[in-house]
Image 1 (cartoon, rainbow, N blue to C red):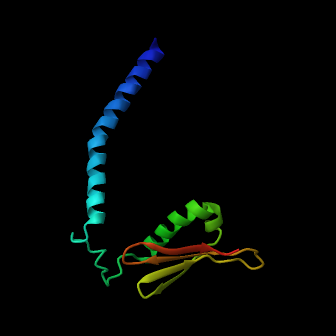
Image 2 (image 1 turned 60 degrees about the horizontal axis):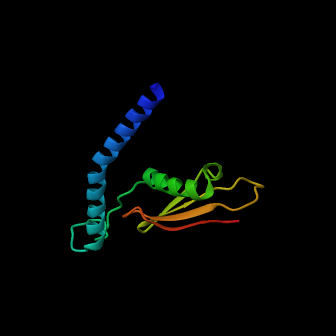
Image 3 (image 1 turned 90 degrees about the vertical axis):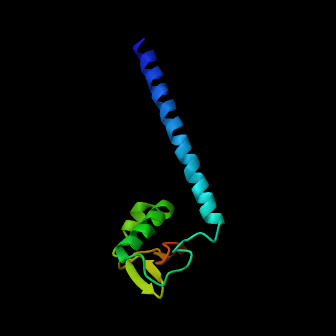
Length: 124
């Protein structure tokens, strides 16, 4: 009987939580849809600011987030220290290779005005 009550309580709170989140999720979806489909709305990023919005630490965080998912955290971490270069409005981040190590390193290019990943690859 205890388990039945626990399951009932769990289902009740899960259902209540989902219902309270549903209008917020609908609002979020609508905002994203309108924002991405209406080019006349105010948006600093779309206007391609000339300012650098991201510093080196933030760009590395963006790079690692994507790289870890694709190539694995252990593989990317062992390529530290990363080499970072700012070229115009882009960051190039590359992995380092130890002496006598076989294989390639990652390279990722990120727009420092938008945080958008423009290219990501890993050598063999």
